[in-house]
Image (cartoon, rainbow, N blue to C red):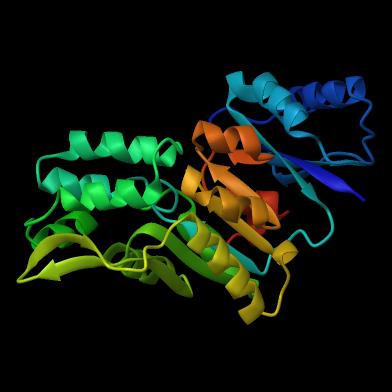
Length: 297
């Protein structure tokens, strides 16, 4: 079965020298190159066809070779490359911030809460306990802070292009988050996602109650949603692409046809073949073989 190595550059132009370095590495690994490189975007993104899939160890070695020039590398099957379902995490993925941390900033306790968030995303804390503890610390905060936080929330570069382009090719796009529906609803609408899922904050008398409504959306819920949407769309898991940054995304990412870590926590970088480390979200399209001229801007 054929595969593609996809190289995507960030600041520095992708060159013939970079491709030669990869070809040299593949030769030493006795991995057959089955054709010539092809440009997806001149000096930005290119495909190199190969006969077999790289191992995690091999992709990590290639990441090290290309890291000084901030070039990302991905490995995917040639067959069924363009996916019919995108399922994306929100915080630190589709948006650049952790919305709960920014909400905590409104209460003046961002430093206290962000430490808990970071440990949870690294998989060092139980997600249920971490979200309950963080939200509990916000008890009494005016619900008006939600709007102020939303107004400050910035969308990650490339997010709109990915959703527009995939929808233009009849893919279904879903936003899933361990964060809150107040934010997922707005971000999904802004970017054109077909659906969104998140947790619900308890609010009473225009103030946060410090509670998260049951059931709590966690990593297993994300995996369940991935499977449910494949059934609804009458497709297989191989027809899906998923992206996220933290430990609570890992089951979903490992189950998807292409699972991508976005500026990933170490636990993802250690486990996933495909990670966006330097480039923006438009790499999701290059990974699927889209050429720049196919992007919907």
